[in-house]
Image (cartoon, rainbow, N blue to C red; front, side):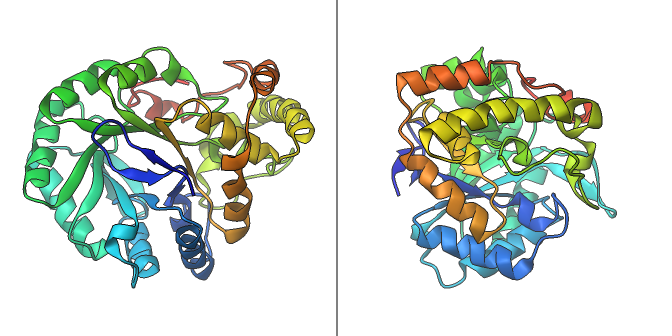
Length: 331
């Protein structure tokens, strides 16, 4: 497994990371045994970066990872943890809390659930409009100084917020959605990251399966699957979006790889400072994703991909309207 470094100050991690959210019900019921086996298979394959959030199924995901990681040397993997989202039974998101007191409280619970003494990269999941980012980052800095956190990360914030946070504590990486059909970061955010020496962990590289090559016309999201509320999967948009995938498939076929591998490889090829996260819930999907790092995209390949999927090709926002206002960038 190749390695990449998260920015100028962050850790060296595997060039492909594993996003664990889908193992805790985000896309419908997941098979617990298969989830555990997938995490372990990822580690065995050399994947070291594992991303979670303390609010993923209200702690379920952290407990799952603790079980999967038991017996592994702590320095053989890196944990990226998001915090700050509030949940009510149901479950339902009911707001954000990134006050310094809350930061430390969330961290204490995460350390216990994960069964670890420290978090490698700790980050607010979203910008809390009621709390200056300097206060939130200041609390993380205190936890870094105390040894409970190794590096500061950010998630889904704009360029101005990145600058403000970085002035308080060096930011290792920004976690943000980046894929062939979600490219808003290229305008302002990515240039600022590179100016400041900050890395990127790119989630949604397969757009929640939409551009994986496995979502088909007529397929419907099942109970508990967040894609049932996603504009890009809505009936009025999904047909068009799958036609974009068909165009990408022709490029993948010519390259001798799968659509998913091509989409992951494209993100990885955007720069050595970018680490794609794949949300594989099964060993089968993980096995498909891993060879993406070996797909060498030539200038001609990149031009063919751009022609097949030009910027702005997708229809529909990447989140429901109620969530779009909390994002630092759009589509």
